[in-house]
Every structure is written in C-alpha cells, then in structure tokens.
Length: 279
Image (cartoon, rainbow, N blue to C red; front, top):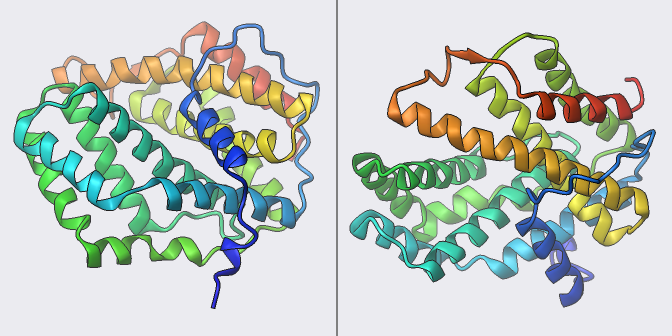
C-alpha cells in the first residue's frame, strides 16, 4: 500500500529548486529587507506539503552505502578529495533539512531523537575533521559506520514516516517559542558559545521553513524573508566556526566563557524578532 506521504510526487524541478536553496542557506544578501510584519497563518495542508517536499529530496538523494564509503575514508585516511567533500556536505544538508522540517511542520514539533543522533554524529565528525582532531575523527567514524549498517539505519530513520501535520495555531506557537529563546539571549550583555549556537539553530530552522515556502508558495515576502534569514545564518555560521576552533584549541570554553554578540548580528536578530506579530 502506497505511503500517503509519497503521493503525489513533486516534480524534479521543485526538488532541484529546494535543494539548490538548501545549499545556499547561509549566503549573504546585505540588501535584503524584511517585510513590516511576518505572517504565520499557514494551513495544515500547506505545512504538510512543505514536509513532503523535504522528505522526497531526502529519500531520493541519500545513498546509505555511498555515505558509508565516505565515512570509511574519513576514518581510515583522515582526508577527503573535493568530490567526496561535496558529497558529504550535500548528504548532511539533506539530513539536517529534513530534521528541521519535521520539527517545524509536525504537530508535536519535536524531531525524532534517533534521527537527530545520526545527524549530530555527522556534525561532530565534520568539526573534528576540520580541526584535525585525529582521535575524535576515528571515534566518530567508528560509531557512524555501525549506525549506517542496514538494520540500525532502518531503526534510526523509520520515525520520519510518522509525520502528523501541525495545525495553524500549533505552528504559530512553535515559531513564537523559538523566537522567545532569541529574545532572551538578546536581552543579555554576553552569551556563551553554546547559547549562541542555540540561537543559530533557531535561525537555521527558520531558513528551512522559508526554503520550502518560497518554492511551493512563491511570493516577494517569502523570498525577502528567506534572503534575510540566510544572511543572518551566514553571519552566525562564520562566527560559530571560529568558536568551534577556539573550543578545540582550548582558548575559549564553549560552555562557560561569554562574549558580546557582534553588533551586525544583534541588529539583524532584533529586526527579525520585531517583525513577527506578538505572541
């Protein structure tokens, strides 16, 4: 019996357009302007369509055996050629995008924990690899090789088909709750690297939402919001890369040491939070 999430299938053009957007989720658009008010009155059918599109590009674009081969190369050789680097980046992007979509568009607004563990390990492996942490690279690669075997992988990913579309009111509450965390951090003089990362994760989730909306429901507002969020995500991502390097170099404690949020990032985050209607 066909899975209702599979039908009707989206076109190749729609899938390609979404994935192209996912790959530039942190591009900078300095002149992008947010609308005066960001509306959140999306119907459950629209939210379900967004999730279905994300799920389709993940299903069609992730080759478990090819990913396993890349993990083997990282763990054994400690080096990747340009083609494998690109392939790993693209696969991880599809995993992350589906995770964000599940959290945003599902009525429970929680991604499956087992699915998240797999993605988190891929991120830890990437950070260790970029920062030449040989022991950590081997450790993460060993665990991932185990999890990418057919049976563990099936267990880790099966929850993605237990999707239940969010109601309009639940979606609105979810977004407002996410923004509350950013507003709280902006009210402080300084934050830890961990707190900064939590803010960036909220922005990444918003980017994922508008990547879908601008493809399925293209409007000038959706494109403007998408570009503004991408810019914030890019600025925060660049700084977070530096924070991770300081963590590995032991020059800044990721969980304890605090720093002031850079002025440009703070300004853009404030503008974003002020554009949403009051909760």
